[in-house]
Image (cartoon, rainbow, N blue to C red):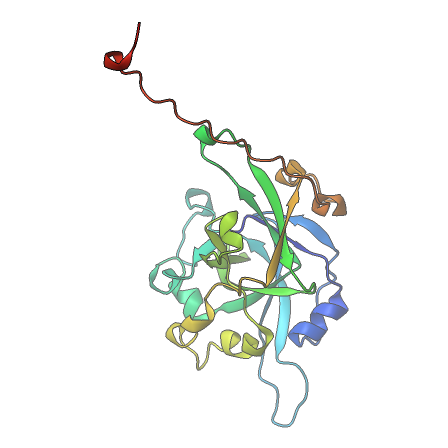
Length: 254
């Protein structure tokens, strides 16, 4: 899954990577959590033939998708992630998969390794970022929820897939990464149906991300500084105690 991420790129960097005419004034954020605003990139209005103006636009949405058919969001679970394998067939996501696919810019994401209780290990937070730096684009979905009084809330979710071998050491899921050469196809909801972009929803290459152990301060939403990404030393895992063979009274000398 993806429960926290970071975006520290400047508006100019985002415009260059995603081909945007302009972006929101979006400050560096080191600990983006569910229900908070996130930046998404979507297809905009088609330009006139011959125009060289970008067709993509960026906007802020609430992280936590609410389908348009929901009557009261207070009675509906917060959908921060959608499983790529099943989203096209799920009532909560299938309309967005067909009509409102977006890109979610990030500098990286946080994940937690949570061992079984009987392992004797503590949970460990990790900062996971592109090995070569820069901005990564997560596959996302967007829905606009309208209340009875006519007010609207734009909402979004991140698509996840099974983890590659590198991330799999930490967690069994990871965000779907869309490569720059596939931006146009992913965002093209006019001609590209979900089945046409299914091949894009695969795990990133094993060497795409680097995994860095960080402190558990990222667990608290109030902590928002760059120090959240400072590497920490991970304690060695305790060695498993060898099992003692059961005592056999027939072999006892005394």
